[in-house]
Amino acid sequence: MSDLEVEPAVAAELFGDRLPVARAFTEALAREGEERGLIGPLELPRLWTRHILNSAIAAPLFHGSVADIGSGAGLPGLVLAIARPEVQWTLIEPMERRVTWLNEQVAALGLSNVTVLRARAEEVPATERFDIVTARAVSALRTLIPLTVPLVRDGGELALLKGVNAANEIDAAQKQIKKHKLSDVRVEVLGEGVLSEITRVIQARVR
Image (cartoon, rainbow, N blue to C red; front, side, top):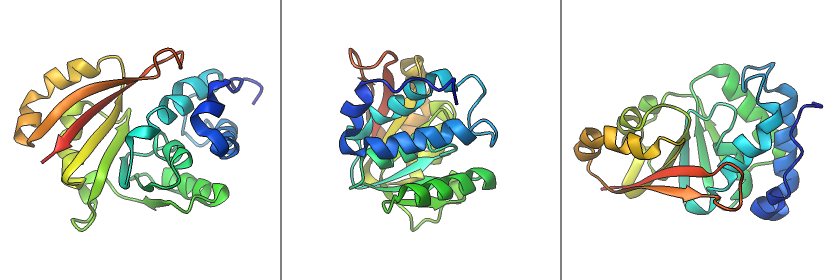
């Protein structure tokens, strides 16, 4: 783990008294992530900046019950669940080895606000509806909309963590936005002046 990025000072600001839990998760991911196929071999030197803090900066956007689609290594779901213990999180992930990792981390970190569900988004029971649905680095917005909107309660929100092309993704998804009756679709830019890499979140209201 000698290549693991030094913990940035801003981590204390974003996690507050939850920082020891965030640190334990980051160290576990650094120790086991590559071997278990959760992160690539080049991610350790930027693990805090690009992945942990990039997810944590979005924590204030969430409330109530949240589903994270394609949770994978726990980005952003586990990071957000650490930062916001009062919010109920459901991590939805189809791959068994990733589900095993997520369950291990939930137990090791004592996260009583997290449920892990092994399923694809389209397999989630119709009885499960959430205040907010999130995803990070899963697929393009036009592909995500039909997968995520059915999981959002009426009046709920999408909050999808995206890269530099977020605005272009909205332009390319106009057909799906209209079909699924999304309103107030916008890009929220987070972390300017705080993080070395800003976070972009596509938000939308589901009617």
